[in-house]
Length: 330
Ligand code: NAI
Image (cartoon, protein in one colour):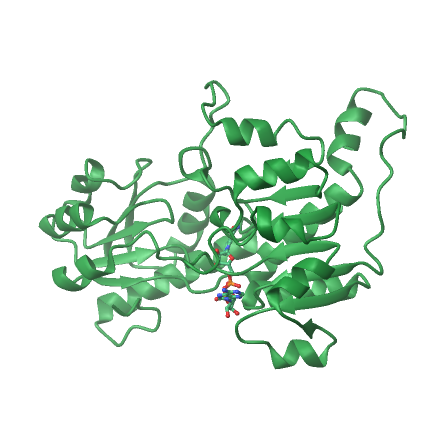
């Protein structure tokens, strides 16, 4: 198939080009995001490949259809950016990569915890300036701490196992408690109980109407003073304004986030020459006990290779017209 690849980043292009050598598909890599203006670039192709922040709105989908596009492959798991009703009405087939490397995200969550708990982010800068003083770098052990995991799907499960390996007591909440995790020592409790008992809370549930602003001033109020809060899931799980207030009042001792409520206009781009207009992220960056990464938890060689492999597999199945393993059913 001839595939129009939108929103290309160099690391993705490298990964796809490496595997395309063994494939019949031909890719055109466009740097542009997919939107109502750029959709026409798809003309002359059989399929479109898009990412998590390419919004497949009714208008974009209609324009793609007018360009002759009947196949879309998402190179991500989430599909909240897709208007599925239009996909159905236009008769477009759409596939995704359901799970590529839960361990990549789980390990990044632990990396955020370790950096914050041992102040590695501060030590790195200090030592580079020949400042070998240890004042202010006292950390805390993870061994023996209570870690609360919210959402024990693929990523939460991998994270819980890592935390158990560190000698933490792991408690968890999920709508569907995981029997295998129970057997290896994870205790499932009510949501509020998990939040209240944890020294460290790590969020691994999806963003839904139910989980939107799960962390807010009310839930924070009963959490432990100085709690460490980690979010590698979706920004909307945390009410940022309330988190800032929690940091100011020392309710939150450490905050590590790979996702941010208003990340859409910031993340994945180099804005180092720009003036940031987002007051909340600039405030968050002023706290010494906050560590922010720009939605990179998935970004490992292993995960990229798997995203590429599954995307090419989805294209093979679309081309062959067989029943689609990774189709998003509308
Ligand atoms: P999954 O679907 O395997 O697991 C999600 C779990 O959350 C399920 O066990 C589900 O029962 C549970 N859940 C649903 N509603 C809940 C609620 N109201 N309260 C508690 N638990 C609830 O998903 P997976 O692969 O583990 O991914 C989790 C999240 O991680 C995704 O939704 C996505 O937002 C995020 N993610 C972030 C990435 C990054 O680079 N930062 C990369 C990939 C995913």
